[in-house]
Image 1 (spheres, rainbow, N blue to C red):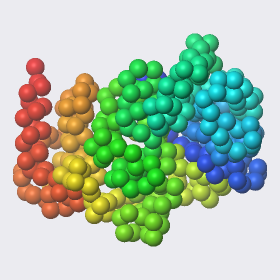
Image 2: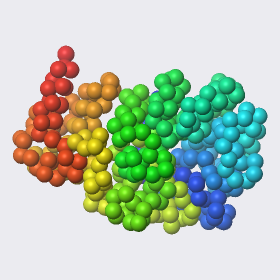
Image 3: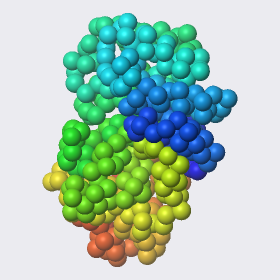
Image 4: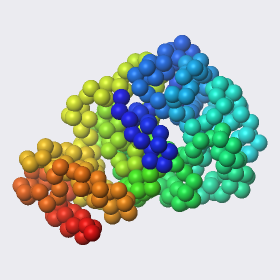
Length: 367
């Protein structure tokens, strides 16, 4: 397992976590076996915005004695009073549902208490007006909630809430389809979505990724916008390459699903290569480096993706980007302008000109 650290909380989080959209559909034994199997192989992060109420008892039985070794995302606004998922900003319902979730999970604290599923500004207004936000903050003051999270599918609204400074973790839908304006939750332009990711990196807000496979659409040739099916590993790598991302949360049903996900760590670079998405690049993303590293290997060893990433983050105001850039073995001024990267780039980035631009920018930043 690989781990990344949330800069605001210090939590060391597995890069693959568990989504719970499907697990309530399976039997208790299958579910518990899958959860335990995942834990034993280093997965330590779970989102609990699940499709069905049974999920909470499954996790209690699987991980009750291991609670302190796991991180739970619990959503203030997810409603399971019918046994199935519902959404609410009614304060009394939120209070009763959070209390029920704590009892059913057999825990007395929540690692990340989430402002749940805000996609329109009226949702955010209602969340505050009805007292749900204050309830969440009160729970944090009491130590029951350790950190504040936000789940959203809308970049502009996510930025608005992030600007309050309350949020330590953002749950956002990241996949090639949504980022390139294809799918039910493809909100915001490609550039607007990337700016959100860079903002999170700059502010130290971690991103946990929901819907990495676009509800399975990307995994089927008939529904993929790229004219061919992508693999789970391509989608996972795509999400992990985005600034700010700490963990990807695919849904699971059984041990076999977990085994498939963990195969990501044994997959070679070709299996993770998602450069095919360059065939579906919207005009506002053409010419922009997405850090896919399809240009590798550089003949002299430049890490072209990271050089571009640190440059973009520095321009976005990330004060650590210059240090990260300086710590690279080779820098933009080491480019020999051979054109190898440009000939391989599916996004038509003029990397030779960009390396000159990056070199000039970072040299200007030196004291």
